[in-house]
Length: 282
Image (tube, rainbow, N blue to C red; front, side, top):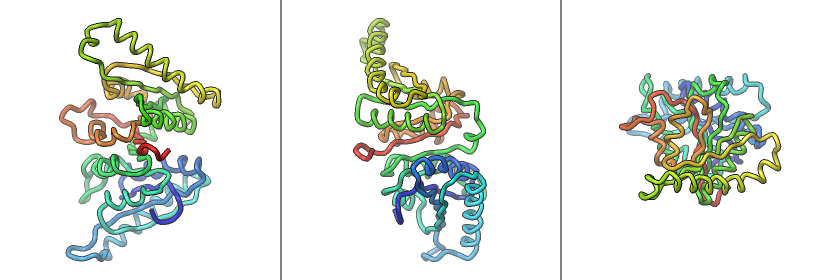
């Protein structure tokens, strides 16, 4: 990343990229770092130069995004840059040392809506910082109350829990800690075994959450233990979810939520997603 730490936002003129820029404002303000808006253009055919038309369009896109952020009225510094190359490669580079990377869930391509989550998927599992994937519709769902953090019994799970606490406090939202686990084959037919294991898992995460509750008495949090995939919980409760937080290793599966899906859990999922940073970077 060039320059000091910042919340990086990939902008391309799409509604979801603008939503990502606005979503990033609170993140940057809470960390007292700038919002850095990064627009990426492809070089001219057979060369490394940016065409005049592309440069003009880049200026319009950057200006529009800067105006949207400044219109929010939040006390945050705004930076902007234009780069040439592959969006995925450049955003991964910018993410190195960044506080967070924010991208829209849908990009503009050749004048229309491009591949859903294409850049998001490209950076989700390889960026060295948390990656937020923001829907254009997300900001309009003020009635949604939940930040949901998927956790596992590992360091990645602890990171997801911490990010969940931070986001719930930042956004004055209720936090759901979802501890999903794979059932062993004999257990799936034993209701008592499943119930007992869920009780143990919930108790463990309640213990881990206790210091945060003590430190932040206004934190509203609940632990949900379940057998199976957290995706099922996301699908059932999607109307209540504003933000889903998943461990870094789940970034490779983000297409299950955003991209074209052979087994889509919903055609209308529009909650935002935060993919945590790799282990050891918290």
